[in-house]
Structures are given as C-alpha cells and as structure tokens.
Length: 198
Image 1 (cartoon, rainbow, N blue to C red):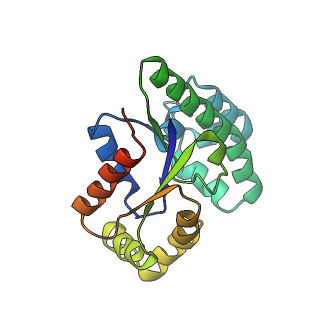
Image 2 (image 1 turned 120 degrees about the vertical axis):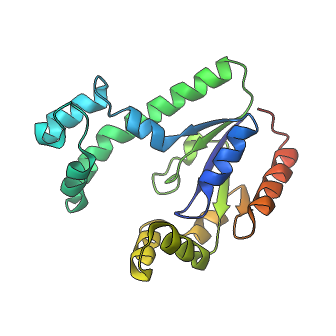
C-alpha cells in the first residue's frame, strides 16, 4: 500500500514520519528528493543552470538556494519555471524509491509530501494520512520554534491550504495537539486498523 503522509506547517508531521521509520516503515521524503535532484550531475541541476544562469550557483557548483529564492520569491513566472523543472524530477525520484522499496520486499510505503494537496499529488497514493493540529496550536508552535512574530506565523500558515480542509480530505487523521504519546497511540491504532506491515 502507498500512503500519502501530509499535514501543514508545525502540525508535527516530521514527528510521525520519524516514528514510522523507527517502526521499520519506508518513508520517502519529498523534501529530501527535492534536495537530491538539484545536486551537481542531476538533470534538474543542468536545467536550472540553463534557465536561471550561473549566478544561482556557488563556486563549487552547488545551488545557491538563497539567491534562487530571491529571484523566484517575487516573480510568479520564474517560480513556475523552477517548479516545472524540479517537481517532475522529485516525483520521478520518489516513484523510483517506491519501486525499489516494493522490489526489496516492503509492503507499505509512506510518501511524505508536505504540499500533497497544494501540488495535487493525490494520484500518487492510495490513502492519505493527515497529521493535524488546530490553527491556534500551529501558530504557537511556529512562534516558539522559529521565533516568529504572530504576524509572521499567521502568514506562513495562510500560505498553505488550511489544515481543516486537509483533514476533510484525509482517509485518516492523527490529532497531534496533545502529547507525543497520544499521537503515537493514534498511529498504532491506525496501523492495526489498516493492517499495515512494513
């Protein structure tokens, strides 16, 4: 079974992903794939150089993320160009990892995709697990974790589809607003319910 693992900023998705890995499950992380596909020697790396020029690379040939970020942050067209290069490469990398996991005898693969709904990637998975925390909890966590002001935290939360909407579209939800033990209990319950084996 292929399960999409998602949530929203500061809802605790990484905590659940970490526990799944500890339990022996394969978790394929979209953010890790996104870093991998832009490394020197990768096709997406070359396409970014062709599209954005040498100035978005450091002297050793690695991607200068802050510089690229500045360019795409204020330019919708440039951001779209970058996404058209990176997103297909990330999907291909994740699907290749998934195939390898199943070929090696794994039964369950989790695709950890923070922007699953935003990027409309529901087609990649059979079931969706949303890690949920109420917006107020999200905001408090963000302010504590990243030293954001209330306004900064709110704008980060607003840039994603609301966690309430994601919850409505999920096959299962882990409410991560309580203790970590409570979240792990919900996860164990779900593993039983869906009869998951690594």
